[in-house]
Length: 505
Image 1 (spheres, helix red, strand yellow):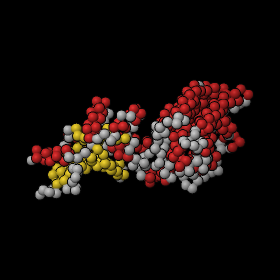
Image 2: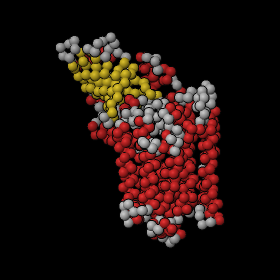
Image 3: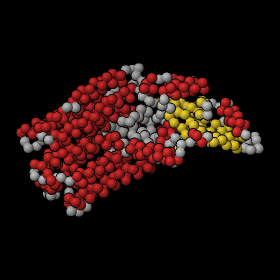
Image 4: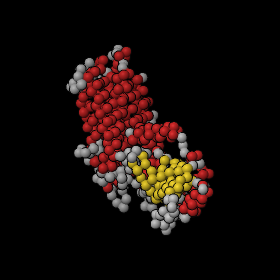
């Protein structure tokens, strides 16, 4: 009986070259028609890794496949449940390449594109069937099943894998690697606070509890900013039409690739900002004596909440009106540095403003404010065409010149100008300490990242030459700016750490 069923299954597979594959994550379902080739009982296909189906397979390998022979009216075919995985072994990739070409040459151009291969944009996937359902309405027994238990991952192992992938999904949604944008200003604010406590003889009053609460509250504010940005850039279609998204631009893409619903992303933003508010009110109560006591913490919290949700959120949409860069610099500069400093130096000022060394904190926040703005600035280069299309008037869009393609020389010059200004501000902190009680002479160590700045400028110049080449492929060239994106993040965080160390010293 099994041999007969196997022959029926073989006959269907031999008379078909396309399959419909259904994927799902968290109730977000997707379907796609793809060419397939056979490798024994397995089905192999080619696709682009950023596609919705590939992203969902990465998070949930369980798939459903439907195959009908050519020329049939849907009366005979296969329904297959299985597990699908990206092929990683190089020998297996070569084998898959040959198998796919036996079926179709439709994607040969992309399969052999060195740029796409080197950047891991394209690849091959293998479906390992666990259950094959043969459907034939011509015969009396219309449904027959074949199971392949050896292809099925154990329930415990699958639950563990899916749990880890779920954690990875949330880390992607909150854009966890970019939390360095929060860590740097909070560390600077804490370092300045420690210096002031030590100089005032209050070093034993340092509170790790308060430090961690400040860091948690600020981090949740950034998560709220990131998630709300994803949601509202989705509603404006800015991320939808962005064809050159990367880990550094175009948002987290969890909505676009069907990993989370827009509602889930919005809830993430609202829950995060609620957490920030709760922590802020607790800190305000501890220092000011009441949850809504009139303190700088309360006003910093109000301003921070406005900036977090108003960056791209309706009806303010600061990022769409040319104020996004200012909002980022203000929120991740003075607001965070001075807010952390005020909380952690409470033993000195006892909520008396005249006793708060706010000038020191403000001066220390200027370099990091400029540098965090530049992270957003350089990331906007890849987003510029899609931002312009939906009326998101970032400074890169505003300063770029229209033509046969978007001219980006001016925004790149401004990027360099602001970068230089940030290090002038670092040097100013060191010089100021030589003549006043403000700043620290050790700030000069925070000039060390200038070597990385020089490298970033050189790479940016090389990229501009490629971008301005009339023959440039503007779907690929934006990806070559990624090293500058990475360098800008590194410059910001390294400078922040060194500046914090300077104040501790």
